[in-house]
Length: 421
Image 1 (cartoon, helix red, strand yellow):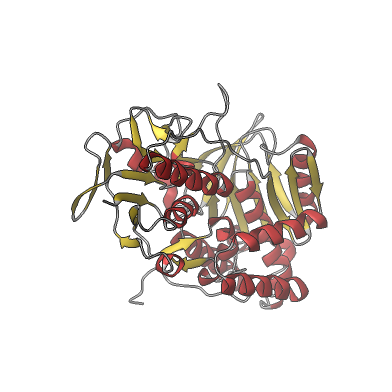
Image 2 (image 1 turned 90 degrees about the horizontal axis):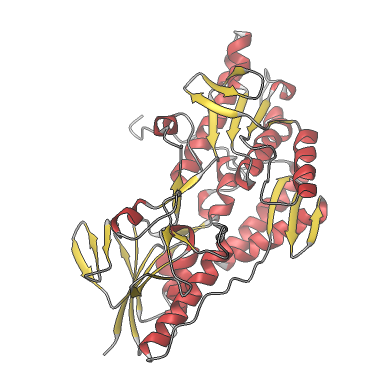
């Protein structure tokens, strides 16, 4: 009799697991649950937010990805809780039992107890968020075009990105480039030199997960293209008019109409229903074989899990981690179904990279470091290879090439929040 495997989440981890289990149609009946019908390439969300790419360039229907696996079905439904003791999940339509479960729900933004800031400072986790940020960025330039008051005009052209990790750095660089290289040619009353992009980081340096040399290179490149980087700076308040910042010497306001949050994440709220210990970020503590303690049939992977690599450090929330864990969880399920012992997960570190702007990036891999044009070309290649679907790769490659030679970003559409207007 086939074993019933449920997978929650159609991200990198969930899809990798589904494809691996799809190779065993005689052993497993697989059901992948997701509240959205598409797989989203999150690392390029900032490109949608800054009008570099269209949403369809980085999203593919999950059903089309898995259509070739006859034992895998897709369920468009939200999972509200997990009960490892009963081996069931709950959805708005009722409970579903499983023999094996892989939960790969990812993470969401953490505002460190200031959830009211989200309305003023959306993050980059979904297409809806990305298109809303794009709306705010483009609307700010439109407001500046017709504003007659000098202070209000400058406030509209001030952009604040909170968080100096790869997402924050990439977003800040993209905003300054669209202002100075693209929109300046389309407007008549905007001086691109008046656009100010602030990158705010609470720690002593940006790109803290990179080496000190690459962090310094990233800082210099950002400053070179016009981003104002504020390190050792805490955000103490955000509203619809300004961001209040406190550093080691003073507290001050930056008047702005556009704030983007890239400062922290926490695990899916689904973890609160599992009943297992979690870390400070809400990630479930898992065993070396990726299962919950005392529940060898229940796997938690990716951003949703805390996988310790030593006593103090855990694996980062990167796509390669989720992909490798998804494949390993599937292999362990196969081993378990065949009566074999499950194996511990070993991560192959593929390094990390971040782009600062056109022809500017940083990358490191097993002691090898690079920055500038070579790192940028590598970044382009890696991200195109990770995109799912030949069509998406070709479209994105063409878009980037066109933007590179013309500085033209073609996805500058302002989508209103109220569809009735």
